[in-house]
Image (cartoon, rainbow, N blue to C red; front, side, top):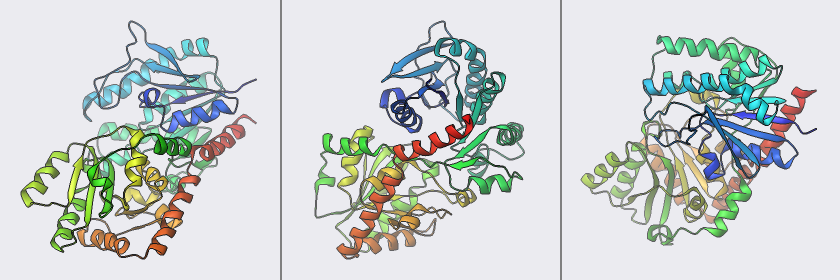
Length: 414
């Protein structure tokens, strides 16, 4: 009999449109291997007022390539304030109420994988699992509320933070298995006073076959990218406070001051700080950096392939002692180009694979040194970094990640 797996992720809603993302890729691979996966998510889109219309029902089901998506009626949230908390609570409450109906319609699952960003997704999965004698795997993609504390968005003394800490610890103690996307998950458990078995690491990654297919099918024409006389520094993704792109902008300013005219910074994406940066470079007359609009994900392989050095930046935080698992990092690896980071962390994949370097955080001088390190590097040496990047991408293909997940599922069902 085929094993049924429920993958609960509040924010997986957009995956049915993009046909991509962590839990879609897990479901896609599990389906190929004879499982019956179901993705359960909110009917609202993350940071958007858009939603999947459930009518008068608490949920609807849509089939996407043989994978049922269950859209649970949830309060929308476009800010990180009270409406975000209400959204979490309504997702939890409504999923708890309709789980019996979902089970009747789609069948009782053998295993539930409940994935955080927030711990109420875990709690919903836990309630269903324990009520029906189902194995529960709790997956941590962000340390909540620790991430909010570290970023200054919430105080440790906040009542909601205290509740989340207690809930987090309860789930870590009582789930049948734990998965962390960050390599230092066991370190974190030790730091909060827990020592338990069945703790696993499955990083973020990519569908490498899809990535390479998009590279062949979708070319993104752009004058800056197509100029082969330029050494192009590439960034793709969000432009918010956590990304701390001001260090990259100021590095462009310093490189312009040094007179290196054939180095250009090309940044794709959007976010609350983008207009601020555009104004900054206009006021300072910085000519070697250009901001591009968001593009469809399918064009990212073509865009990165035309660059010379990928880069990501971020705020300094103690959380990086547990490792990092940025989604863009794996697209960078698959591009076959070296990567520069200023996120000082343990379990550094750039160091592990020798496919890039990490420099000291919050320093223009260090980023500039890192850029010039690759800019002046002999081609033969640079090519080794590129080859290592491809190896890193292959090791984080979701076919391999699903091998790990399948082993965890099998262990729980024995």
